Length: 137
Image (cartoon, rainbow, N blue to C red; front, side):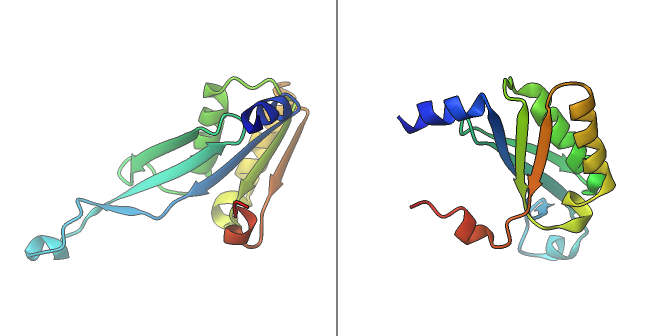
């Protein structure tokens, strides 16, 4: 019942939530001299599809790219291109990180999505308190 409702809403409004998660040191070692050696940091961005309830994880090491606005926009565009979307409105929810989510790169991506005709409207929401916002009742 709930899944059918979400699919009907997805034909009008496509909703995703995204978050660049905590960096993961690789390899994870906690003993001996290896603990004090330089580790490679691994980045992970999670994108949750509100219609299908699927999650996409994009993972890369710091040797490939950083965790700046370009990488966030690239991951978001890849996720949108890999998903079959019928809606003309896009709603994105993310945290309030200015360096990654409030920048010219993402605005340019949204303008690109609108100018190519994939969406008529893109809205990016920044909830002020995440745990309360996503509490299941």
